[in-house]
Image 1 (cartoon, rainbow, N blue to C red):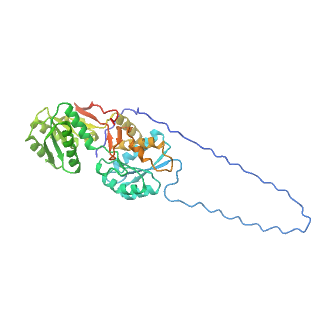
Image 2 (image 1 turned 180 degrees about the horizontal axis):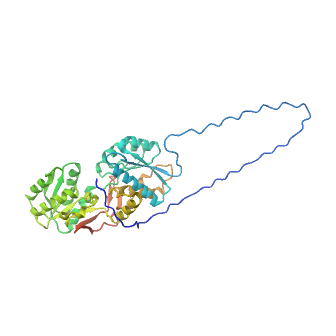
Image 3 (image 1 turned 45 degrees about the horizontal axis):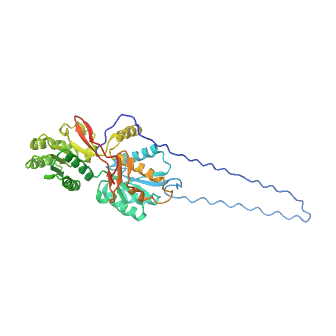
Length: 403
């Protein structure tokens, strides 16, 4: 997973100052005085003094200490192993969001899914978590979901696999189907009617091809050719050769990262014509050197905007002396969402899950989003074009949702 580019501009985004409530406790002591009386009768021997009973110590509780002022939220991400980099970046982002909002309503505790997602979820729930942020990987979401569901704890996962959403699981990840639909509709608005696709083998490719066919059909266009390939040496070039047998096309979707797309682009234009548009997916937005690939000049792809992300990345680098992973913004926005809902979330009560289905949606670094009935985040996406070493927005994201 590629790291996002670093940006040197200072943070100019909004910051919310938290409200600090202090309580002062006062104790009053009462003194008792007694007078001495001289007895008239025989003097009785004084009573033997009683040994004071030792006070029993308070029982020691295991796990996290009680917190009666904040709601418990668990962050489940890989903090060790091969995905530790992105997991720690998400964890850092959530801490940054807590500091920026100044919230005193939630307490976030990190749990490492690399050592076992089920164990992490069980421990988090045992320690009082009423909301889970994460996990990152779809297989971990499948493991955590029934555990959280049995406890009545909603899950805000960072996966983009729509098959794991629903039944208390909400996905923050960038869904490829939405990105493909947005760029296809933009190409159609620019007069493109004939499409072709290069699709990698595997689950992502299968879902991308289904979304592509539906989107093109929805615009009234046609998919003339769809070629699959393995991610092996020469795999995509062989697919382009087969693709060019039915050229020309108005646009070709490369449902893969920017690097294989840059390999395919000049071969596509050689066979289909220089005016053929290259279309990309949301995967392109995670590559820091995408604009530096001359072969992709003029290509279009749809993704979340980067304006606020650049500001966030600058502040992240200033605090942690490292560039954030692009996906870390999901963690930041998950905290913003949680803080907003926490205003009406009494401490110790269950998380108000119905608030996640707010039709007006939420706002964050990655723009506006809302959860559909399927639990997948519907995002307001923009279309970007690679122009001579820079990336330019050619179709801004909508400011809201149409209902």
